[in-house]
Image 1 (tube, rainbow, N blue to C red):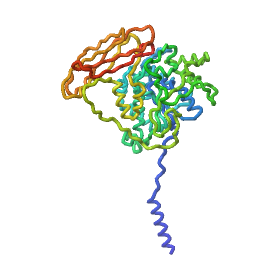
Image 2 (tube, rainbow, N blue to C red):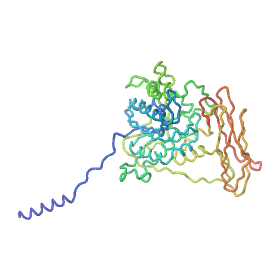
Image 3 (cartoon, one colour):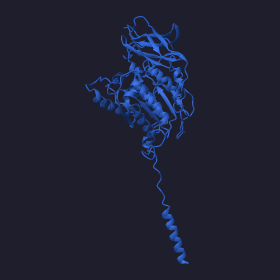
Length: 457
């Protein structure tokens, strides 16, 4: 009998040894978990939403992480002689100190080239779009944000820096790709150990003139006479004059403190506000635009309305769709054509309603380069004549006026105009008209703000 029991014990022991239990899989590192992931272009871009971040951090205890695509090495320097890479190093330090003053320590700088331009496609080209996108997808999977906060993906007077636009294009793409197991699959469990992550909401902010931020200073900006404030009713607004219950300071003052670290840029506004106790330049509300929510909620409700901890299923967007065209047509090209397709592909088409007529801002006496596209979706060859209806003082320097198109041709045109000098800020309209055989085939209109605070092209 003892022999039988011994044999059974040996069998059990052998089976147990054969069934060696693997350790528990390691979980994601909670040190990097963020409720809000801010994706921006330059050190100091965070100041545009500093009053909201202070509220979210101090009152709601929301962990925040930041991705900055560039180090701002092409910006000016208002306090020293450092330029280029040295300036980029200074600006990174300023940003880390500014964000650390809010308790934000998880900050990544991707080192994309700072690109002074108004054309989002130029920034994406110089950045090596796919490489930066891969880095951002990786960091979304690492930080597992509930909400992504980024610049507005639209060309608006005041909000016309190509790098701002580049950062929001990549932020929107990362929102739609980070949960996809087939996208950047080398980052996942069998190699880098990350897991897909679908953020729940994405919101936008803007430095358009209507946002009325400290960066405008005392510039005499004139509101557009052609439309209402495009921010109205598009998302939640957060007062900066309210006093923080936990800090006993207004959010405007907290925003000024955070801004004061950026002395190479416009940090002097924050420093002067702290010295004088006058926070007027920081008292405009932070107005956000709701881009997309996968958890419901109202457009103007709180950023975290409907957000609960945990994962949500990956939601695949429709992507680019073929558009059937007929006849001859005239359209804006460049960033405007890109955004028309981008909004549809990422299912944020409501942004097209913000500005049905495109607009931009430039400094007086600056050249204006506008990409146009003439399409011939007919079965016959055509000659199209293009003319510009210009306000007083403008000069048309476009090289050609007549364009031959074979069937199926898409003819890119670079319209070049020279703007006049002006004594005061002014809004003007420019219209291009296209004709074929004296029959009109279409027109496009651009609204231009001439005044200090625009950008030369």
